[in-house]
Amino acid sequence: MKLELKPKKRYLLRIIVPAYSAFNIYSFIANKTTATGPLYVASSAREVPGWDIEVIDENNLRRFGPISPFRGADHELIQQQRQADVVGFYGGLTSTIPRIYELAHFYKKQGAITIAGGQHFVNETIPEGLSSEIDCIFLDEAEETIKEFLRALMENKELAPIAGLAYKDNNKIVYTPSRPPIQDLDALPLPDFSLLRYAKVEIFPITRVRGCGANCEFCTVKGKARYSSPQRFIEGISKILETTPVRQFFIVDDLFGQDRNETLRLCRLIKEYRERIGKRLDFCVQIRLDKANDTELLEAMKNAGINTVAIGIESPINEELRAMNKGLKPEKMLELSKVFHKFGFFIHGMFIFGYPMKEGINFKMGVEERIKHFKNFIKKARIDTIQVLLPVPLPGTEFRTRLARENRIYHLDDLGWEYYDGNFPLIAPDEPLTPEELQFAIRKIMGRFYRTRYLFMFLLHMFSIAHLVFYFHNIKIGWKRWCRRWRNYLFRFGGGKIVNNWTQQLLKGPFFEKLVSAKKHLKKTSKIS
Image (cartoon, rainbow, N blue to C red; front, top):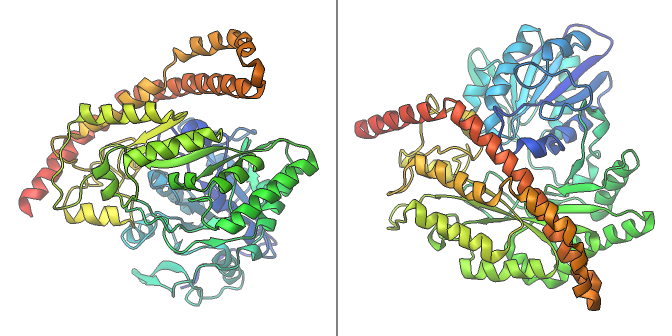
């Protein structure tokens, strides 16, 4: 198959990070950062002569971005200003897929070639994507594929020789040979944030590792981890700091510290770099709880300026942890959490509420008892910030395969992809739970933890700084404890506003009506099968 371009002196590739389907708990942070995948692809595409490249993140349009009165960017105006010849869509978040299809329909009417890629697009979702005005789907890592694809368009060549593609030819889906994972990550160009239009980035996402060996049932990130060198990582930080005053970074690797020796070297290099430039840098990483056993690593992380750890604790209920393929027990998790606190890290705990048991496991627990378990664990572990989500049967996961086999997933006709963000019940839960109880539970836990009344605690704490006199023997410890409470009160107040806003949007929306229909539909199909 060939895709034809109109003859021009230069062409424009526009890559779009689609807007969330509605306001949710991620909206606040999305307004301050962006996704790394589209930037890596865009930076590679820039190497192809004859092409201009730009990335538009619809969740971050803070620098003169033309905003649609409905949601996202005003693409009609953008296309009038700069006509894109090829438009790529980032499908890394399943909940944004309806927005991708909406934009694909718009750009096809404009005569653009449409492409897409990301974790959402796997075997079961590719036919739907190719039937939704997307010309071609990139199946594997796209840095090399995009360059071959753009050259083929300019030279009017067939797509069949390009590995890692899926497209329709004579109404039949064609899959080209799979493209092997990129091994030499240092050979890739550094992500060029100047390609990002309209966005104001306050927390820069950076990465060194691809893949994760944790093998969690519910996760799409699998495979043997691959690494770029610590030196290349420092180059990326340096490039960002030369063009922006921002000092906050989020290392988006799914599991920090997998490559232990090189991670220790990375931490030393970051420490040396910070001392050389004389700037305070603040890093957040995602890490496993059992890394608390490696005190040498924790010490190196603190010296490097890593202050916040995001940990997938998932559940304080032992039976659920076994179902997820987690290797820890709740008692051990409490013990390890205290180690992270001892080293002074802020802990962001990530939980999944109501995870369904596997076949053959007889375990039942009511919603109130589950909520009590979660609240007690969060309090005992002294977690600074939390995120409690519901189980999401993402395409391509073992979790979705298992639940589909058990006929427990609500049909997409009733609850579409836009609800796949972890804030909505998407499956028939274990007895005696109901989906309404699951929805209530996460609101109750989050609403109790994040409350607007913490504004008063924050203000009161501001005047308690005189209490530092009691730490005269060690003013450094006293100052850290005071700052921790000050920060947490502020975050809990801000989180309270977000949770309240999200709850109001939920109650105004059609979700609960759709949930009634989804339950009836699933019950009907269960009887038929």
